[in-house]
Amino acid sequence: MADWLILTITGVVILGIVVMIVKMRINPVVSLVIGAAVLGLATGMGAAGTTETVMQGFGDIMFEVGLLIAWGVLMGSILNEMGAIHRLVDGLLRIFGPRGVPYAFGLTLGTLLQSIFLDVLLVMSAPLARRMAPHLGKYGTAKMATAMAISLECGIVLMVPGVATLALAGLLSVPLGKMLIFGLIVIVPTIVISIAIMNFFIPRGLWKIEQDQESPDDGESEIAAMNTDPSQAEAKEGLVDGHGTRVGLLPHQVHQGVARQEKEPPLILLFTPMLLALALIASGAILEMVGLSSPPMDFLSSPVIALLISLLGTSYVGRFTIGRKRVESAVVDGFRESGQILILTGAGGSLAAVVAGSGMGDILGQYFSAGSFAPLLTVWAIAAVLHIAVGSVSISAITAAGLLAPVAPQIGLDPVLIALAAGAGSLFLVHVTSNTFWLLQSMLGQTTKGTLKSCSLGVSVASVVALCCTLVLGLFI
Image (cartoon, rainbow, N blue to C red):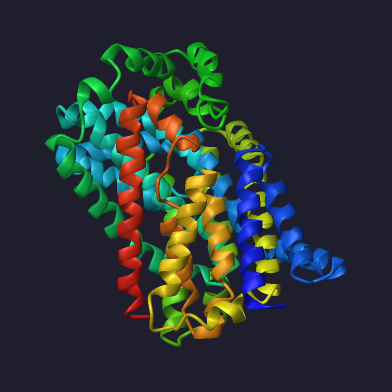
């Protein structure tokens, strides 16, 4: 089959997936599998070959990241139940003061807390960000909303153990320790620079308080009611378009008064298991890069074992701080949240496998070279366009990376750069099709116009900054 025809068919299939998701309202998982099947048949893989490739692609990505995603979501659910996030944010305000809080808050959400499912983390941290906003002055709401939007979206695609980051690493066969190190190298300057850029323009005409914020009484009373009255919290649960789940709102809110009456353990104790896991994974990657290894360290630093140790440690700490029953309840909620993530990731792996089997790698390899920025710019642009159309960071990142994955072995490009570029592109223009957009609007007291500035513009700035950081990184690896 001619190269131009394969490229055309692939483009039409990707467009068809977008139409199915956006216009026909077909579930993204179903749309991705349909697209993979059509692409395989149209490019001559045959019925049996297409079916086998779709199933193999799903199984391969689950083999790589299935347990990792499950461990991460479960650990985040237990941390949520223990109220660790509220205490952490209070500590940040005391330590860094008003000027430094947006940066400290953003870096914490974008790096340390990425084991927590995005919507859950947003719902947990938004009332705290809104409570801190008045301490930052006239534009406090704008600054905290921007920091939250940038850090939450960046973390999910650039930082281990963000669910999309795990999927990208598995899809491109990037060792998780390597993804952790290079993702950290990119995400830290991305968050800091992006917040600094936005904070520069916010007080210089970008943010209009009377147009971009709700009146102080509109959202404050709702947040206050959710933080003080459990029955009101339960009544509000369904108001966030179905995303105010029990994991996101109720456990910590309902038990908050009880937790504060008890003697609280040191905050560092709650996060020690997670920090241990990240240290083990990073240590293993560093030892591998310098050519040093030992069987015990190889075992402990393997991501699935390191995160399992972290999960067990978090559960153990939880039993002594909130009790066995609440830990078990958090685990049940975590399993409920992880199911949809796993299936979506697997469907993305199916499409990527069919794209690779269609010969796309050989075709694109003719036009790219490892010494050029063209592959990274291409994957960024594809992810950006997909995100604008579909509204899902995970889907756009996984799909774009799958399209360019075959290029890496052809031209000698390090796959971690493709993963980071795909993640960066998927951040571009978070808008009204995104759940995150509406959650940020409703929970931080912004108007739709204000959210277009803090979220859509802010995260788009981060998308470009992350691409620039990835391009610079590409000069050295």
